[in-house]
Image 1 (cartoon, helix red, strand yellow):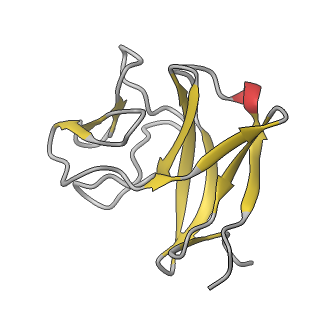
Image 2 (cartoon, helix red, strand yellow):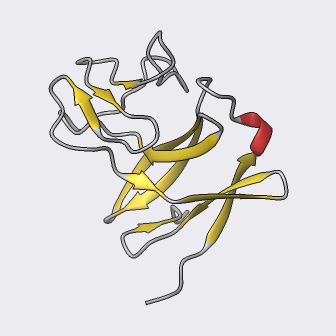
Length: 123
């Protein structure tokens, strides 16, 4: 099994606390899916853009994941709430936490990291 790869995602300053997400494509367990990165309390976090209630994308408009308080992620379709820093379900009809994607920041860039079941989309 190959070592994890670090893949450039966006400039660090593109992610603002409680602001718009940066979207990216991944292959997770053989399926091509969207993922998103956000910043919360100064740290960048990323998840698959897939609600655990019904397997559909969560944002009602591209990049909009935070609720009005800026303290929770919300699925626009059914209202499930998730913790921005862990992906844990905080309420609503979800069935567990969001799938987290490992991130790192270095030199003003945010990178996402592959895993055994998470890879770049092959074109």
